Amino acid sequence: MGTLAEEILSARLGRPVHAGEIVVADVDYAMSHDTTSPLAIEAFRKLGRPLWDPSRIVIAIDHVVPASTPAVAITHQHIRQFTQDEGIANFFEAGSGICHQLMVEKGFVAPGSIVVGGDSHTVTYGALGAFATGMGSTDIGLVYATGKTWFRVPQTVRFEVEGSFGHGVTAKDLTLLMVKTIGVSGAVYAAVEYGGPTVRALSISERMTLANMAIEMGGKVGLIEADEVTDRYLAGRVRYDTGTGHLRPIDPDYRRIVELNVDDLVPLVACPPEVDNVRPVTDVVGTPLDEVFIGTCTNGRLDDLALAARVLEGRTINPRTRCIIIPASREVQLQALEHGYIETFMRAGAHIGSPGCGPCIGRHFGVLGKGERALTTMNRNFTGRMGDATAEIYLGNPATAAASAIEGAIADPRAFL
Amino acid sequence: MGRVWRFGDNVNTDEIIPGRYNLTTDRAYLAEHVLCEVRPEFPTNVRPGDAIVGGDNFGCGSSREHAPVAIQAAGISCVIARSFARIFYRNAINIGLPILVSPEVSDAAQDGETIEVDPVTGRITLPDRGLVFHAEPLPPFVLRVAAVGGMLEFVKQYGWEGVTRTEFA
Image 1: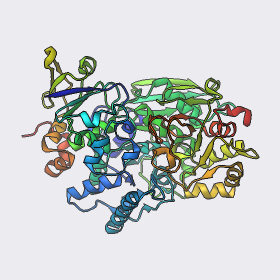
Image 2: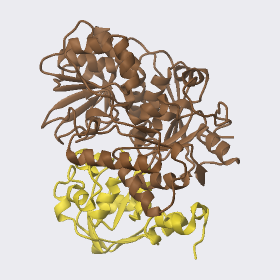
Image 3: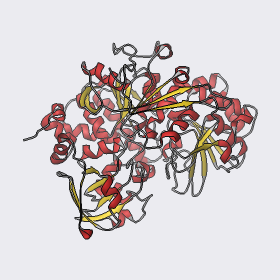
Image 4: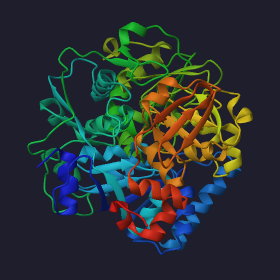
């Protein structure tokens, strides 16, 4: 009996657990990438124990791909060597895609599973009804060695959403509305649970866009009940069954319930320098842009690229604005190629990057210079996130980003759809 | 005993150690750039024993353990805040960086004043003004983690069972 977070942890521990309790649980998979693996490997080596289970560890090189400097290349070599030495077969080489996209696409996440990752956006997998959370490298190193970790069972903030998206409005606008409503610390140390008819009607990709940004409210996990949409997506992908079926909240005691109606929602933009500084796009239309970036674990999937392609079809990117588009994975890139989206983007004048995080982490491939301004489909607009500390980052949906690239300034996508 | 370095709400890990410097596990290098985005003078002026006092949601953003590592490498003895983002909090515990939740100290402490912290009892004093505070006590296992120097050593000594133990001899 409890929230979805309590139900998943109770199922795993075989006894009812409640918010506030500290528990030690077995995890199903542990993930790390090129930034967080080195410290995790260091922690694992310090423990001096054998690997728990090489088949349950997933390592992706996605943050700085292809390598940008000799130092980065050496880090990648070090990680490759570790995967070879330890027999980690679930290793995804640079160009495969963003770790979170791969975790979902390649079937490492199942409803009712517990998955931990050395990256804060691990919360994304809650879209499939999994208890998935980001941790630091020492925690991940401990999981490498033991297959276990500790949790404080979280309280839950529940979003109950109804209504239908209007013209030019997407799951990204809903997630920005949520962050605006409760603020960047509105769910600190809590699980975020998403429900209601609007959420039920979303695709897995859209649900991932919601869960992905649970962390932007401080959330520990972002949970959506698994249902027939989840089962259809996972058929032929998922590698295991946790045996829990579709868990759901039972007589839950929520810390807070937030009711939202999206019928009148308009495209939103998060303005610098906080994710909860959210305004209707109409408030900032005309703000000149140096760069537009479409991609990331928030909005780099096929439906996101399809939306951007609808806007960019037959149009030209403004010469004062650089437009970078990076598919979230090779699978997404291939599908985008088959659908003709990549050609649409290239004819419009966009740069196409190899699947990975791109400029979202401010290390390469499109970083911003002094005083530059970007609108992106990312999840964070922190000072210095994309390069120089004086640069400004706006966050919006893929249609808003594409329309803004055409205008060379922040634009309302509704005029382009 | 050290000095207070005051920060506001929602200090994120990109500000603690920006992505462009977060390319290495070299602690000295991380310390050279820690918090440079928010207070450029911090890396050069910080002295061993100083304490950071933040506002709400300190350490929000990415999971990079490099953030508390950089703070620890700079010589900071303790981080106190009104509240912490959970991954940062966990990472600080794991590496043995003392970390205390105290809304009262977050409100009261002034930049540059002297501060004395006892992470075990949670007693925090601001001796220049004769103020004494008591932070929320940490779970017993967390205190033990700090005492043995971090989570790796804790799990080596006590195993995962140690996490739910309430007493340590």
